[in-house]
Length: 87
Image 1 (cartoon, rainbow, N blue to C red):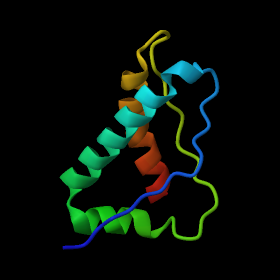
Image 2 (cartoon, rainbow, N blue to C red; image 1 turned 45 degrees about the vertical axis):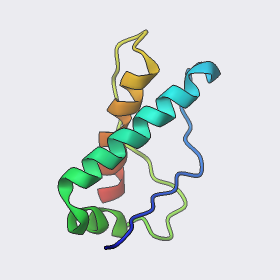
Image 3 (cartoon, rainbow, N blue to C red; image 1 turned 60 degrees about the vertical axis):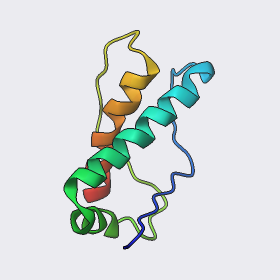
């Protein structure tokens, strides 16, 4: 069994209340795990192969309703982050 480790050094989100940060990060982590697990290990590794050695990944824009809970934003961020990895 292989192990996949994705390390995000820094995630910059302007306009997020620092008190909401942990809930957002937890939701993002859970959603990334879900999406990578759904795609299967081979697809997950293929998607991440392109980021080795990159210093920065710019994810596509994301729109979330004003006042959305941090958990909603965390889940919503996973897709654009993975699309940014694949590009």
